[in-house]
Amino acid sequence: MKNQKISPKVQLLKPECNLDTVRDGRGGIFTWIPQEPIVEFNMLYFRPGKTRGFHYHPNFVEYLLVASGSGVLVTREEPYNVESEEYFHMSKGICTRTEINVYHTVYAITEMTLIALLTR
Image (tube, rainbow, N blue to C red; front, top):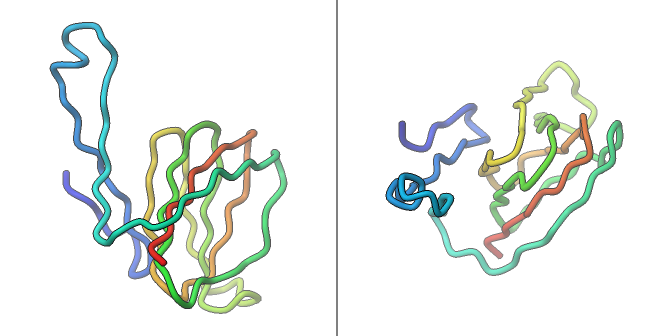
């Protein structure tokens, strides 16, 4: 399975893996390849039941890589338009790509750590 569009606004990235590193007992190396250059990345911590408000990025695409925990990525057409909501379960190892100007937020189910990679 290649990268998969899970909505017109969000794409799920599938990592590549060097299976030799798994087979020989060393662990595993998983590699995600973004479509555009990454120029900034941030580590985000979320507490269960907490969220950061719906927001959007007018100038860059955002990749979210879940390092630990479980939650839900929610997108909307407008920040208060609940009827336009789409959601995607996120857990360790999931990487998403959110388009420019897409309102989004993450709701933590458990404690979560995400790496946000930005193209600006």
